[in-house]
Image (tube, rainbow, N blue to C red; front, side, top):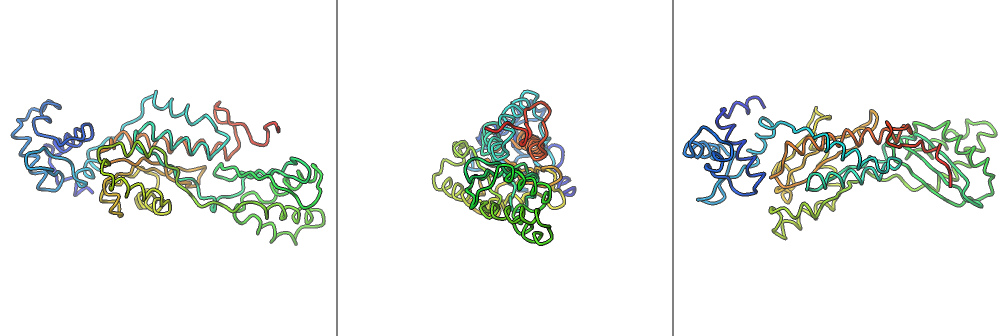
Length: 369
């Protein structure tokens, strides 16, 4: 990287940065006169034109037509992102808006994730995405069982990612309300930290070690757990598709169709997001530009993505998808801040603690209807 930074001198860097900024703003090829006028450079248009020609020859810019101005190439964008860009911090009003939007439903991790994706789309004017935690990697954080009617029981299971599974099911035998609650307390006491997916197997494996009353509780717990739905694989929540396809780059119907088709293949999208986080730098925001995306149908898009953590656990990715002509500096700041905030909110839900005045009520202390 340092060697790459030395390939351009101060003047080349200045002109490349100017081209990127103007093209991001206008979506129109950039000419030398526009650069001199817009940035008030102490350079003639002819000098700027010569520098742009050198940058084109080096692969940082390209000319769409013989008489047109120039636009950045993927190599030009990459140089800008790596060496010229300063991540733009959010304003106080932007931070306040994000806090306000995400604090609407802090008792529901799935709703917080959906709100985060919607908020990213609205704030970025591109497509927002959040990779939800993979339930198959989740651990039991809290279990509760409550009677909800004749031979019916409600099961609430909270995992360490803050996600809440609920189930109302019919029992095969009559159990008193006190008995149902004892089964819940038995699971909560003995199986916190166990894999959610492996909870039933863990209870079954330990049943023979329990004595009398606890053994009977374990057997009855197994009957209920057998009715729980299977864990879901990590999914990607996408919002703002229409905003993405309003961009000039996607006016071509066939190109838009290819990109949209890819977004429907969530497994491939998750793989792409995870590969975007650079080796050895798992906590930083990463940017993938155009042809750096391995799938040819996605060469017109760029992705800004940042991982988020729930507690100490890596949980998923937060990001923005847009055309290569996106405001990388602003969006990098937006994605990084939103990822940190999402992680803190989900951590509050998973810990079942009140979050600094935002209204997170411990699940088991809420009044039952």
